[in-house]
Amino acid sequence: MSAQAISGKAAIVGIGETDYLRGTDQSILQMILAASMAAIKDAGLKPSDVDGIIPPPGFVAWDEIAAHLGVPDVRYTACPQMGGASPTAALVNASMAVATGMASVVLLTIGWNGYSAIRPRPDARPNRRRFSAAFFDVVKNYYAPYGLRSAPWWYSLYLQRYVKQYDVPAQAPAAVALACRAHAQLNDKALMRGRPLTLDDYMASPYISEPLRKLDCCVETDCAAAVIVTTPERARDMPHTPVIVLGGAEGHPDRPDELINRKDVLDLGLDRAAPRAFAMAGVKPTDMDFLQIYDCFTHVVLLELEALGFAPRGGAADFVKDGNIQLGGRYPLNTHGGLMSQGHCWGMNHIVEATRQLRHEAGAAQVEGCELGLVTGYGDLGDASIAILARSTT
Amino acid sequence: MSTSPHVMIPKPDELDLDLYQAIVKQGSLCMQRCSDCGTHTHPPRYYCPACSSGQFTFAPVSGRGTVYSYTVSHMSVEPAWQALVPFVTLVVELDEGPRIVATARGLAAPAVRLGMPVRVVTEAKSDDFAIFWAEPAGT
Image 1: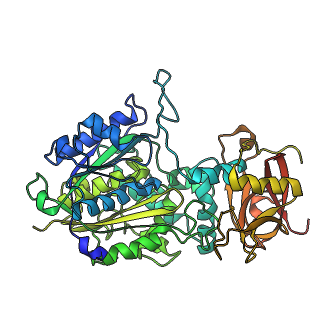
Image 2 (image 1 turned 60 degrees about the horizontal axis):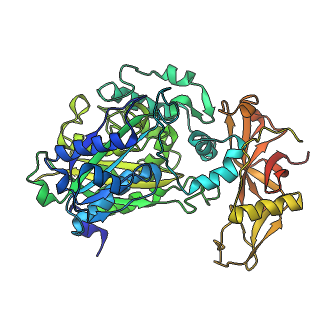
Image 3 (image 1 turned 30 degrees about the vertical axis):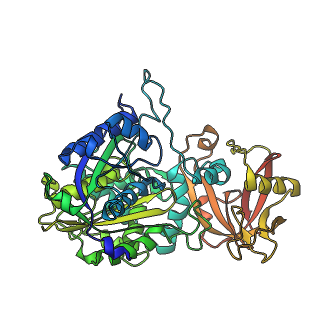
């Protein structure tokens, strides 16, 4: 059996998300349950229809979700552990589960208090929810003692090599930040709606750790999102136009738990995952009508665009210029505002937005007549996932 | 040499502890070295990535290397580092192969170039941990 055998054998039929906030009284569990219930209702289903659950790679476990929602007969669980690549990997995993008959309706969800965990309100109740990953040990023993305490500092260790090796101009990451911010102006749920951004603002943004300026980084957010996957046959009876999973893959750098000892530090998981996903889907990058690209940092988006085949290594600057990635351009990118400007929901919000686009329900951000698009995930220290999605034609 | 901003002192375990204890005992940089094929590996692993051998030692290395990448930090959440911004952190590719993170000393941000030769020296912070400094070669 090849991966092509399950191409087109799963569909996204439900989406749900909370508001994107900086400060909330809701616990992570409450937000995840709210988003999950919204997704189940969006699909026209009840919790008892769900029989597969893929929880986040931390914070909340599948059995809590089942118990609180009231899912009486769980027959499939899995948990991809790759940080921000987890949701799109979960989508591919759920697609396999329904395509092979191991489950019929799979819920995938993620959420966190990315803002409130760091800045709790004075009267906040204690929160025991924690997230962990294998690379934390590497960070603790080899990066953190050097003042490199969180993601911007770690990522700078290889992104600076990218910038210096290829003379990447500041206009390139700026184009990503500006596109996301422009698209957020069209989204009622975007944290940065009402706060437009100019190139001058970007250039005046202070460095955190070179090459990353503050405006190269995504925003700390309290939020959750969820997606329901089932078979295309079952999807026909559901309220919305199904969104078909044509292809998907995950990929990981060699030395997945560490950043700097890879033979080529710019050879990331997506370099491996993307060709597999396009082959499975039987389509080309140039067939895409939009791109929802995991945007923890702007420079990471540039590297992902190169890994996807839209530009040669070091050449993404030419691809993102002249409005090419803005709505109205050839490849609108992160039409919801992305992690940069809608909010950081680990990329589950990218799947939600891709689904809206392909349902033709994206409102002011609608890519006219779109039929094909892709979503990427990027996590931990270079793990990647990708899904290629199509509007159902049946 | 005793005052450094490296205040996050980890308590390593398993192979990381073995590596750091070897460095503290030696008083200079050591790396994991495969006993069968001689490949140096960092961070240390139970099996050699080149030949899959499970036999290894923690052996002294030259400390010579070149700048593979770097970052210049302009802010920090730690007061000890915030007092030093902008500070330079290097990724040094050792002549023996592995790459390590080290704080630049005697090397200001504008002078840093990919490929420039540096020398790594160690400073013990406990019996179980040492930090790495990188200085311009020839100093």
